[in-house]
Length: 229
Image (cartoon, rainbow, N blue to C red):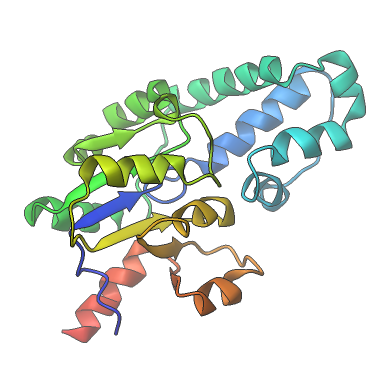
């Protein structure tokens, strides 16, 4: 079996990998659209199809499906700020939790003093809010948030910055993502790419052929390790 624990540097995406906040992002967009007088008919799966492939996917597809919204507010940054405010409200209301198996995995990394870093599209403000609710996240000593790099995923800039900052020659690097967009960024680095998700992305078979490891959750990773022992 692939030894997923044989690593000296761990890189984590955040939303959907460590914490269950993807649903909150969806609801924040839904609230943004509906607060402007439109019926947002997308379900969560439809949202993921738009959000998890390219950085402009949500903007392009929301404007395409709701042209009157673009006429009302053609500056996407205005709408995006409204979405972020909605997301902040949802986080303040609580209900954020670690993804299955993450607690045990983070404790393992902490106990073994393995280098680790979060590399996320989320801004520092939201990260700080969530860390207050989930103090185990403070065991991760290094964080790269959206303010720390220029080009969003699928650019590899954020991951390359983490590797340049923390990596040394001979490091065995593993990176965790939950979306095709994030995985595209990881695949441009020296890290072993791991896709942790339950979503049935059609590209998964091809990713696995390219050497990506795929698990439904960290819970599955831990169970596989127990079975190996």
